[in-house]
Image: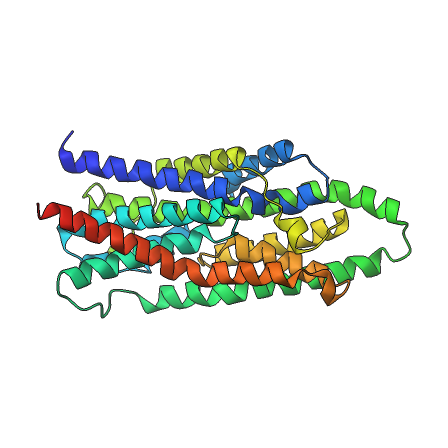
Length: 346
C-alpha cells in the first residue's frame, strides 16, 4: 500500500468516526420525544432509532451527499498536495466541536459543524498560499444550506403546530386515556419515520466527504464538469452503519422535556412534523440540521397550549449554539490546517 493510499484510508476512517459521533451526538434528537412521553425506555428507543437510521439507505438517494461533497467548496482551487489535508482538517474541526457541545449539553448541529469545518480549512489553505478565496465557496450550495438554518426549524414549527391543532380537533370528544393509548402506538411509527429522515439526511453528509476524499486521493475520477461522481455502494452502506451504531451508543439528553412537556399525542405531532421536514429537504438535496428541525417541531407543538408552555430561555440557548456552530467549527478546522502546514516546514 502506498503512502497516499494509506492516507486516504486513514481519512475515510476518520470520516466514519465523525459519522459515528454524529449518531452518538444526535441520538437525543432522534429519541427525545418518544422517551420524554415515556412510550419507550431510552435503551429500547436508541435501538429503534438506529434500525431506521440504517435502512434509510433504501429510501433516500444521495442528493445531499452530492451537495456536501461537490456543491459547497471548489476543492480544485486548492493545491493538490493540500486537498486531503483540507478534508481531514474539516473533519477534525467538526469532531472537536461535536465533542465540546456534547460535553456542555448544547444541542448543536453536526451537519453545520461539518460544512463549517470544511469551509474553514479550505479558506485557510487558500490564504496560507497567498491566494484569494474568490470562487472557492460555491454560492448555490451555501445559499440553500445557510437559508435552511432558519427555514427548517420554521417549517418544523409550523407543521408541529398545525398537526397538533388538527389532532386536538379530531380527538376533541375522546377521553385523555383513549388519546394516550392511540398515540403511544402512533409514536412508534412517527419515531421510526423521524429516525429514517435523520439517517437519510445525516449519513449522506459523510458520504459526500468520503467521496470527495476518494476523488482527491485519485481513487475515483471526478464526474462530468468536475462534479462529484456516483457514490460507491460500500460508502453508502458503511456511512449508514456508522451513524446507526453511533445512535445505539448515544445517551439521552432531555431536549424534549427541557423545551416543553409532551404527551404521546404531542410527541407524535412533533416527530411527524420533523419527519416531513427532513424528507422534503433530503429529496431536495438540502443538508439540514436534525437538531434544528426537531427543536422547531417541539416548540410548535408546545405553543398550541400557550406560548408560556415553551421554555424560551432554553430555546435561546439552542439558537446561540446554532449561530456559533459554523464559524467556530471553521476556526477550529483552520487552526488544525495551519498547524499541519507549520509542521511541514520543520
